[in-house]
Image (cartoon, rainbow, N blue to C red; front, side, top):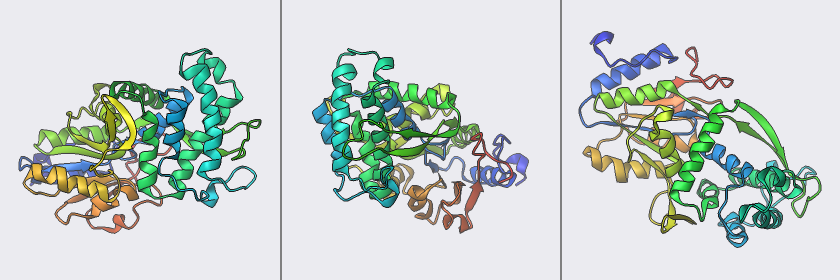
Amino acid sequence: MSVGAMANLDEGRWVPKNREVLDKVISESKNQGNYAVFDWDYTSIYQDTQENLFRYQIDNLRFKMTPEQFSKAIRKDIPLDNFSDDYKNVKGQAINIEKIAADLDKDYAFLYKNYIKDKKMSLEKIKKTEEFKDFRGKLAFLYEAIGGSFSHDISYPWVLYLFEGMTVDEVKALAKEANDFGIGDKLDSYIIESSNVLTGKAGKVSHKYKSGLRTQPEIANLFRELQANGIKVYIISASLQDIVEVFATDKSYGYNLADGSVYGMRLEMDGDKYRAEYKAGYPQTQTKGKVEIINTYLKPKHNGKAPILVAGDSSGDANMLTEFKDTKVLLLMKREGKLDDVAKDGRALIQKRNAQTGLLDPKN
C-alpha cells in the first residue's frame, strides 16, 4: 500500500518515521472495532494538569473544607515515618506528616477564618500574610514529599482529597481556569519557600516547581485521524477524571473527545460534592490499575481486543504499554530517564519534545 493511500496525519512536528508508522497502523486497523489508549499528562499535553491545578488552587485559596476536614484530609493514609532524605527542611532536619500537618493546621485555620469562609480580607491582602506564605510553601512541599517518599497508591489519591466539599461543576470550572492560566504561563521552574517567621514544627521548607502547560496539536490531530478511521480513542489518567475531561472535551483546547472517553481517578461523593475518600471498588488509574481499566472497561466494548496503540511517558504507563502482545505501536512521548526499558521494544516509537516550547521535536 502506498503512503498516499494510507491515513493522512498532519505532518506537524512528528519525527517523519513516527508519522509514517502511525499512518500505516491506522490504515491497517481502520473500521474493525479497534481502539487506542493514551495517558494524559506529559503525553497528550505537555506538563501535568493535576499539578498545575493543585498549585493554582493553593495560590487562589480555592477550598471548601472546614479546618477539621482539612486537617483530616492532609493526613489521610500518610505513614508517620519521616519523609525521604530529599525532603528535609532548609536546615537539613527530617520532616514527617505530623510536623508539617501541625503547621498547616494553624495556617489553614487562619486562612479559613479570614478569607476562605467569608472573605473578611481580600485575596490580595491575605496573600501578604505570613500564614499564607507558610501554607503555600508547605502544602506544595507536602505533595512532593509524599510522592517522593511513599508508594503511588498513597500519593496519587492524596492531592484529590483537597477537593472535599466542592461540587463537580465547581472543580470543573476551577480546572478550566487553571488550564487557561497554565497555557498562558511560561514553561519554567520556580521556587516556593515557606515562611521565615512561622517556621513551626517542620521548620522552613523550599522546593522547585514547574510552571506552564501546553497543548499538543499533533496528538489532537492523531485523535481525530484515529476516530475518522473508526478507531476509538480513550484516555487513562492518574489525574482526577473530571479534570481531564475538561481538557479532553472542551473545544477551546482542540482535542474534542466525546464524553465517556476518559478514565481517571474517582472519589466518593456526598450528593454532588466530593468526599476525601477514593471510590470503593474502582481501580486507581495508575501503573497496574491502567491495565485493569483496559481489561474491565475497554476490552468488553471491543470484543475482547487489546488496544492497537498505547501512548505514555512515564513509569505509571509502563504496565499498559507492555501488557498486551497484540498492541501494534507503543508511542513513547519520551522524557529523559523515563521508559528507557520500554524504548527497547521493537514496537516503540520515540517522540521527544522541546523543553523550552513544549512542542514536538521532529529530530528527536
